[in-house]
Image (cartoon, rainbow, N blue to C red):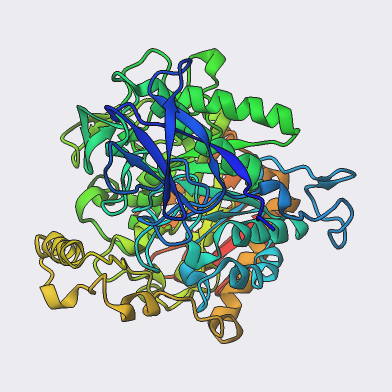
Length: 594
């Protein structure tokens, strides 16, 4: 009896194909026809199976819109039936956590939330979605509202940060593939956690990127640190924009992701009147209405341009928020005393820089930037502090150091507690980096797993050459390709149960609880924030309504007058509060109410 062959429709945008396009299914090639209604598109029916496209008789190439790459970035593509996944039904979430309603998960808004950035490959020793999901109770007990996953698109090998990804619609197989990501998202939602996904639209990785063979996905009109820019405004850019927007919507729709973090949007070169970011935000807003969920976009941008988060009707791009490196740099300098590179402007008067960012959002809001050699930025609207993410550590600020060393390796637990208090009581949307909450001693280093030996050697040499310019010996910089580099970066989950990590973890939980319980501590109005400090003595006090957050970063005990009717709400380190006078030992912090 003959076996029934299931036929499916294949289509691909391949304007660079001069004569013919075929789809290769399980080794057999089937011709596609030009689509008369869509320039550059080819379509047709062929048997279902693992497939690749063949342009003008060349070698098989994976589908640019491949939903799955089971054999890696260079292998054949595979269809995914998203309807086949069994999502948790309404009422299945124990205890009915926030975000659940009668119809199931309905999402949660970004304003008022606390975020937790994590990397699937190093969050656990197994490095998979399923293993990460088993630690979500820790995240819930911490009190955060969203986990932000670093990129999960396919990249060469097993280990990597994810920013060299390709196949922008697919999921890295070693992490668990499409169903693994869905299981993670479903598990997070059942516990009341939203999920944000980091996506990269400004470039593709150097290995496994086959898009240039299909069409004008890149343009020489603009250049970025990675070479020719993604084509957002040259001929053919309508299709490229549609490709990127389609990928973004697929994460939000098919994987039920709640929001996207957009990597380095300052590298999205676009001279069109309707900027790509505004178009993407518009489509995400439309999907939010269609799905009845609050979906949002967060940008990484170093432009210090408030238009990124200004609503479209007011002339902006309409993103919900952006990362705020200025606040990080000011806080980092105040805590560590470092002054190299872009820290220079902040290190001159670190407490003044910290006060400026807490009350103005951007440090550089039209001021001179010595690092850039020019004036930089524009003023940020003071009523919208929640549109800036504030953080003490991120994957970039740790991993882009030569040794990938966390500040916990050089600062006392008390000093870490001071930094945590300033982040978690700030007018910004706070974000933590995995392990920060217990002062993880493990580094988070730059690691790759390139399968091309020439590329691997180029990355190794490039990394060491970069830091040699700053005085580092080549053998002191970890080899990105060495397996030990990624192993060193895996969190040690025994640390939270040991001193001094346990005490710091309790402090983080306390601060997040207070932020959720006391509206003044999450008030996003920058104009309502008042900061006092004594640069010589090293103390700083942030006024948040009735509350005061006092830190002593100096070398000697500091005395601060806070009012006769106050009391200490929470503290880390040694403090004394008598008749309205607060005395803090070095590296101590107190939250008081007056």
